[in-house]
Amino acid sequence: MKIVQEQWTEVDGRPIIAYTFTNDNGIEVTCINYGCIITKIVTPDRHGNYENIVLAFDDFSSYLTNHPYLGAVIGRVAGRIKNASFELNGKTYTLYKNENGNHLHGGKKGFHHAIWQGAGFSRKDEVGVQFSYTSPDGEEGYPGNVDVHVTYTLNNQNELTISYRATSDKDTPITLTNHTYFNLSGNVKSDILQHQLKIKSDRFLELDHEFLPTGALLDVTGTPFDLREGKTIKEGVEATHPQIVSVGQGYDHPFLLNTHHDEEIVLLDPESGRTLIVETDEPGVVVYTGNQLPSEIKVNGAPARKYLGICLETQALPDAVHHSHFPSCILRAGEMYSSVTKYTFRVHEEGER
Image (tube, rainbow, N blue to C red):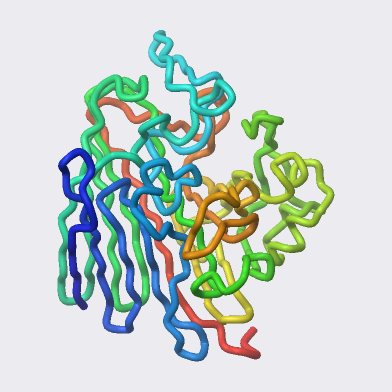
């Protein structure tokens, strides 16, 4: 196992470091200390070809805007907060409005634009990097000084684990996720429409016209959201269900998970044989099929387009600050926020069930 770090560029006189770590099986991950962004994950297909399975910009300057949030850690709160405000302990907090008068993915700066402190590590059976950042009281309108640690760990079982930890000196909402777009075809040879997605979930959140949860938890039975036995992405995004249509003909929805650390999310590309298993202790996962990917940006050397990648954002349910029946996203002062999501890379052989 090995790790290599090199300076990519500078921002405001501060170095942007790329960390590349590799396990003994040739699985390779590259991430940077700007936004904890994952820029590359290299895995083999069933024929032993090693290729990148995530979307990334070719140049660093595109990450300075990063409208699609490629590969980044999202915080303080992943997802949307209605009217960019919330009430906590009798006080109303006003957040930065960055989407239709609402607050999205931590605001204008957010954790995806922060420069983190990075420290690589290499041990006998694992390799990776720990990123640290202190979000000051009032950043983007949130209360409390929050110390955040995000650790990426790769082992020889071909498992990439993302561990999130945070503490605050004031009560504050927090839910972190990673916004990597996966495309298991390898080097973006095709879109994700033929990928198969399986999720152990009986319910999903209904969204309104601004993609905000209405508060209703809908039964997946008989809908394109029933992924319990698996569906191709194409089958889902071509459906006429109003919830599919309203978000740009695709998925952009939170699913409430039935189980945790139990192969609850499985993505398979039948052509390459690459399989991604996602396991988490978070209550839900937001599935986003790249319905709004803008064609004016370039990723992996070519113009972006709809359905070029899929995000599997493990997190607390969006806008939980306004829905008391959702699991709480409030971190109490002096307590520890802790969350773990594991990504396992496997190869599905032809004819294998």
